[in-house]
Image: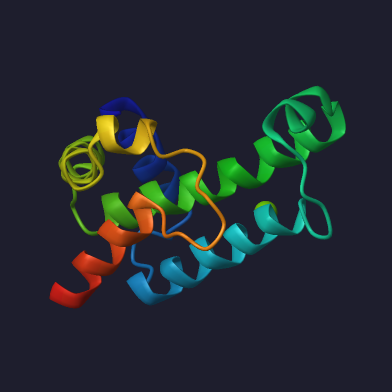
Length: 127
Ligand SMILES: [Mg+2]
């Protein structure tokens, strides 16, 4: 990740974009996220269907790269270690949603609450 962070910082410095306000980068992340979402507007394609659709995959690659670049820009501008913050959050999420519990609760009966939502609600109450 360090190489990529360095490359992105060089990219920003070369254009004098290394003083962007975090709020502007956050807006850009969301704008690019919306462009990613737009690719799926009015559809509910399954994973395998998307993977088979070359045109859609190209569009996803482009918009996902935009989102990821802005995310890394935010991290480097704030002096955050991208890999460290991802690993820390992933570790938290792994504890919050234990794989054993999530695995056995993939299909739920109508009218029942999934384990995922039960855990999510519990954490929201304490946030
Ligand atoms: Mg874009």
